[in-house]
Amino acid sequence: NECLVVIINCWGFSNAIAALPIPHGPNIMNVKQLQNELTECKSYEEVLAVMRRTFSTIGFDYFFYGVQILESFKVPPLVAYSTYKEDWIAEYMVNNYALSDPIAYHYTRYTTPLFWHVDDDWSKHPYGRNAVEFMASVKEAGYTAGVCIPVFSRECTRGFINLSVNDHA
Image 1 (cartoon, one colour):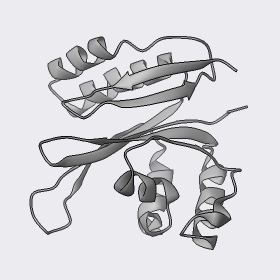
Image 2: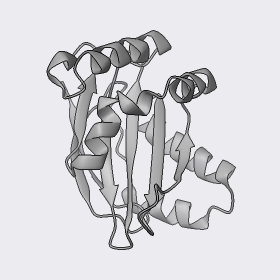
Image 3: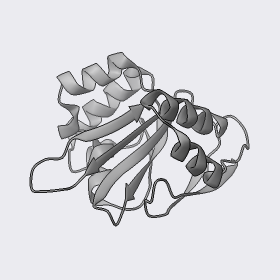
Image 4: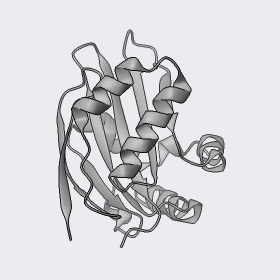
């Protein structure tokens, strides 16, 4: 299996290094070009278009980029850019999946990437059966594998980029 080592340094976030599986071919992401293009974006739609093109170039079908600005002891809102299916996002919110999502659990507690597959043994996760049921829902929604990369900054922001595929071998 081919892998691509990617250093991500988006919008002032700390570097995250990941060896990403290349599901569709050995294309290389130019991080500096991505940063420059994102800096030039003037709208949500422009950011989505740049990220969609960049992440699909390295073989990922979907992405979710979420960021929170931690300003006080209140729960900060999550600003998100995503190409996930609207039905899946609605199901996630209606079922309050954030309480059983092992990927969300990971990004709030760790700085290392999480390489995940829906068929991994999620029963050993702290969410136990809830994590297993959640990942079954992820699979049913058509997502099979990916990598979640937590990102943090000196400006008190935290977030993650979750890149996923629907046909991972």
